[in-house]
Amino acid sequence: MAVLSKQVAVPKFGFSPIPVIDMSDPESKHALVKACEDFGFFKVINHGISAELVSVLEHETVEFFSLPKSEKTLVAGYPFGYGNSKIGRNGDVGWVEYLLMNASLDSGSGPLFPSLLKSPGTFRNALEEYTTSVRKMTCDVLEMITDGLGINPRNTLSKLVSDQNTDSILRLNHYPPCPLINKKTNCGKNVIGFGEHTDPQIISVLRSNNTSGLQINLTDGSWVSVPPDHSSFFFNVGDSLQVMTNGRFKSVRHRVLANGDKSRVSMIYFAGPSLTQRIAPLTCLMDNEDEMLYEEFTWSEYRNSAYNSRLSDNRLQQFERKTTNSNTLLND
Ligand code: OGA
Ligand code: NI
Image 1 (tube, rainbow, N blue to C red):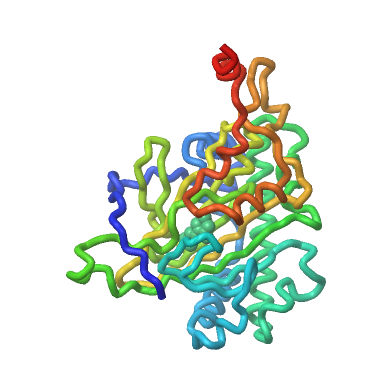
Image 2 (spheres, rainbow, N blue to C red; image 1 turned 30 degrees about the vertical axis):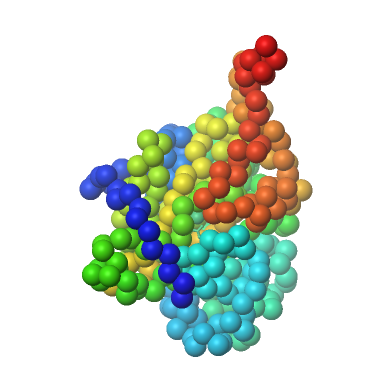
């Protein structure tokens, strides 16, 4: 596995400021909106997803990654399939292997991931059930967000990710223990598991085992470690939701550092809209004097530009609109 070893800033804080949202309390909608504004990140508890279902999928995932490399590479592919070290096609590498799957509702009747997994029925069923439950939870969270924002109808956001032809992805990541960490040769440097980035979709839902590594970037630029919690889900606001809220919600920059002793296994559901969906600030969220901060684009345009960029690129920059004030300055 290729190793990327470089000095990265160590997080400042020992405590965790991560907002916790209780899905069983409708009043959480206010805290939810605040979490999206302040962090673009929150942890969800009392979500109703069966621990048994999650642990079956985790078990199957661990089994898959324990297969010999020659078998895993049988399902290597781009954009979907097995990958090792290389993330995307533009030179990003990390201490990680992964399996990327199409989790869209129209990806086929019967097996959700038809050509990828040869047999194992248990794995396929677990993937299907997991995706169905997480999609449902994502819609509940998005409806709670619209309630908190005072938007009508309540399905304004959830319908974007629940239609038949939405473009959603399920990613399984495995970060093996990294032997370079804690060894004298590495001088205590961190090893990047998954380099810093924002997720391009509407919202992403992450569940991991109890191994640490995930960090989020706060608005002051500092990195904070997210204490792992295998019974909860972590949500990231994606770039598309940042645009739809005209910058009110933050698409959170995050990364994973490799661990010296334990493996980390994570499953991320990226809830994306349909390819033809227009992404633009929602007019119902704008006051008369507000200016649109972004040019509108389709999800397909944005997805292509994401595929053609490096992980750490600020992909929204090219869609930022010049404000009237800066236009005036330019014309002077
Ligand atoms: C991602 C991601 C974090 C993790 O795949 O986009 O941020 O813990 N993963 O694997
Ligand atoms: Ni991510």
